[in-house]
Length: 188
Image 1 (cartoon, rainbow, N blue to C red):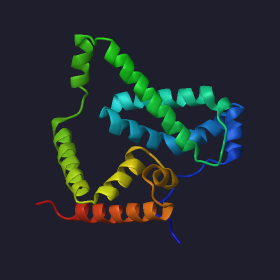
Image 2 (image 1 turned 30 degrees about the horizontal axis):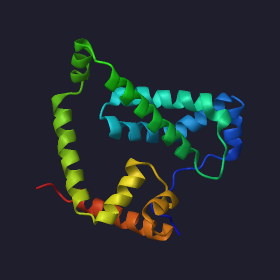
Image 3 (image 1 turned 60 degrees about the horizontal axis):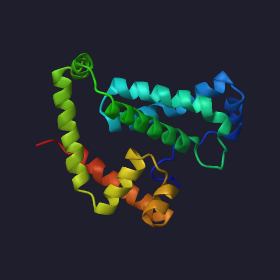
Image 4 (image 1 turned 30 degrees about the vertical axis):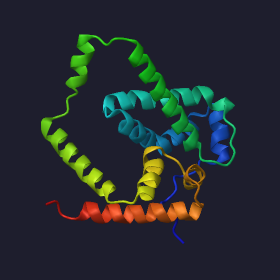
């Protein structure tokens, strides 16, 4: 029976142990498996691709520095990486709020190289996604937010909102079906 939504790969303990020993190939595999998800998480939070790429890089640097303290408990290594990413983002926001940015940095942020057409298309797509999310039930929206924005697993979501894991999976599956139907309809 297929599991909905599909789970992210769980890094085997042997790969984690190899990474703890400083094995570059092990780190390369961990990076390949999680970089895209960590970058997507940070991009949703910041809205800036260059900043998200920098923060994702910082996340993996911190992970390399702290892997010796990681204790595998059977949960996906991704949960640990997302925690690091969240802390990197919070640290960045604290630093940003305590220093005043120069006029040059402000101009550089506004001129990120994104073309106007791409911005308009992205805004229209974001509006379609928001409208599709509005069509979900409150519980479905909560599960989608926790799963895809916060990066939690089904058991973690179940603990957070007080439902059984099966109920979380069902809510997630139905929400995805509803979103798919809404987003594949032709725009009016």
